[in-house]
Length: 387
Ligand code: NIG
Ligand code: FE
Figure 1: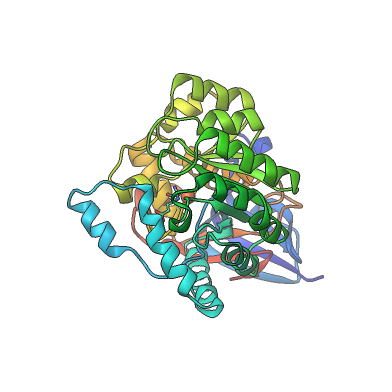
Figure 2: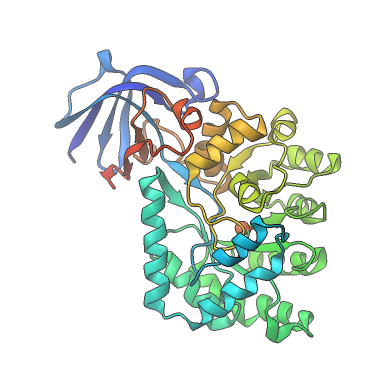
């Protein structure tokens, strides 16, 4: 196995608690990659020899971003809906049906090309792991093919047959829940690691969501929930009751919701590019962190509520608008995302972890929030390979 020494790192973020501080920053650092994993991490002065060496010329290195929430299997866009929203229309769950109609009409090749384009766009911005949901097919065949296509790009695939009730079931939501927990689940589960439900007024209520999540769990899927996005509601409490890995959005929380997240260990996924793109109030990250909740930052890239794939944008918004420190925001977009996906092999730069990283055209990670909108990711590595 060949080894590669990356030296000339002005500042290395490891997320290794043993190195002190939240993010274990090492100045003037080096790392050695062997095959697909990190073999050695430390000060440049102490770096061992390796087969090959690359001098990064005083750039910062951070763990590759772990985007724990995205919806990349779709066709078309909703730019007109965005424009209407910016001139006063509120965002509502109903817009999802526009994308469902376009996605059903698309070929596999068209859907795969769109996923490939967005995954490449993410990679250029430092994302090295992405979770991808279905949810714009909403027939048995369209959900199963959405997940099979997503699986070509990531192991972190999520069955979201319960995104909204599609128009053909408008008069029979119970019948749609039967489909989602029955034949659609059977066809989708082989391609999925997770099951998710949009718990919201206009989507699914607590009882429907509980039935869907438990049916998915019985098929071996882990649990994720779209919770408390557009208003307070039962999503967070349900996620905590069932021991879900993640309750995502968490924009409108009661004190009881915050307490439940803190005591259950469910990771709160905050998706600030959604609030940016829907001109909505941001979630209160400070309240969650101060209560001891584990927070992940993710993009929620989708054609409706947020057509941005940029984790650097999320970090900048979290710092500027949500009172997260730059270190907290970076941790949440890396180690926090890994916690949300229940992964311990990613989200950190420590020996034995998968060699995923982002090289920044900047002297430190602080520039991610300090220089919003600037493309700072010079290069990323996934599993030890430049990509
Ligand atoms: O996470 N909340 C539900 N789903 C997406 C929005 C999807 C859409 O509007 O197409 C979200 O924001
Ligand atoms: Fe979402």
